[in-house]
Length: 215
Image (tube, rainbow, N blue to C red; front, side):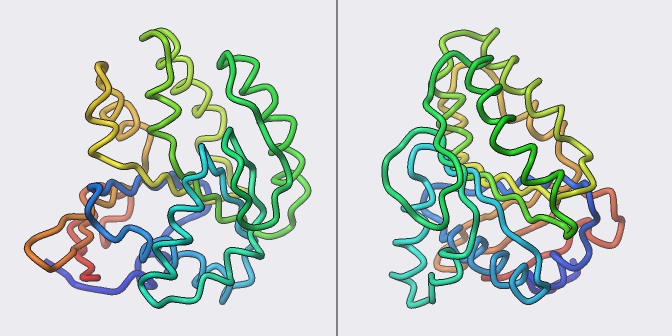
């Protein structure tokens, strides 16, 4: 199994990719976010974070507790979906309501940011599993998945969905396989004893398949 660092992975991704980062609750997934934001900063790529129900605040606290500098998060453009704790440069606040209306509000805020950017945008989505947990029916879950489809392959961005496996697997309907189908790259974070590893289990780039990163 080929071993590398996060920077090798980020550099190998292509415009329009959708990256799924699956992690258990007890892993330090905040280190993955920290690495990603630092890398984007070094490339002068703007970062847009979809912050669902204050998940970004949790990541920020854990980054600081890991003795890492969280100041780079202050520069990120943040679209808040629910929640009240402000982290980063909040450019829109969307209330959680019926999915069709909520998605229209998101499109109104997000589309101009991506369409007007001349640079590749690193789009991080935190807490999406919470959005699915709030769905009232299987139909609404499927609607949320279909809403994501309109952004798949958008060459203005590379999207990174951080997904808490412990939460998403608690949902009655099988959401994770649907997300995995949409993703061009899947990174599974595993905790083995005191060691945390990230393994790429799916990638359109053959060089990334089975690549392993140790945190």
